[in-house]
Image 1 (cartoon, rainbow, N blue to C red):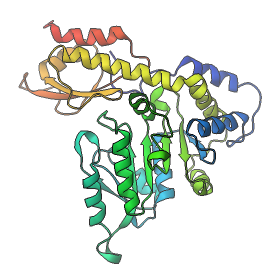
Image 2: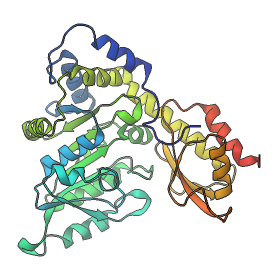
Image 3: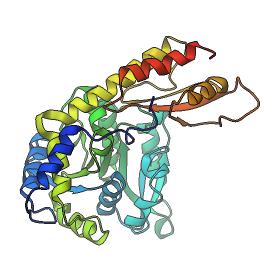
Image 4: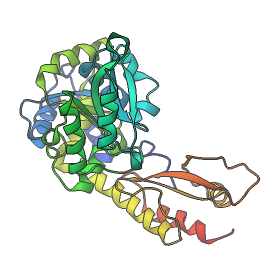
Length: 350
């Protein structure tokens, strides 16, 4: 009953096999390996972007922070959702790799940015001349940290606001595949066709050992990204092991299959909880859900070996009926019996 995070699950066997195959013999370093050529071509084809620059890094934090470094200046601010991953979970990496650009938080429901709020927030900046930060890029998390997914219309509305102010747009796609599967659209339709300039294309949370792709739809930023990646110590010498993972991930649309499995598991979990009167706090649109129930049930679940994060409160407390919020995340390997066993614990006082 492992629901702590999708980065706690195993690497898919086809990815492990690809790593073993890549380990045979010798290959050029630093991304000059033949597998990287194939990855680059495949991503360009998937995104219908033949001129896009494609690079690999090992972590989502590196992907996000290095992209934002290319899109912003140190005296600017990055506009993002109040609970964006770059705000809450990257230890100031965006500020560090941009040379000091700040983050300005934008409100909205369900973990999203509201377009009107974004417009008002951008408009309020750059009003103090040399004394204030200047307007910088907009960063959109898709899927959001609340497990919700921006529709194409919502994405278009946000990028439209950014364009009105002449600002570039970055998409943090750590769970890009989960969002894409839910929307049933193409990668191009969810990125450059709605106005996204640069994408962090996630894999680690969807069955890979540790690799993320950076897709720059403006190829003029490619050389700057390469320099920033090297200077930040994120250019792998034995790059073929990153390439091999991504190559296996994209082959035969494994990435979509794994995301569909994770989303389906989350749907099953949400339905099982709903059948027991537990209503998710947000729409379940990707592979995670938030919900709350009494402390005494949380204690029972943890005693039975369930693993998940509490988003509010602690297991210890005097009031057994106090509602505590949980975050439950499914990955490609989440078994149905784990979901059913977890839900069954709500039915028993044992």
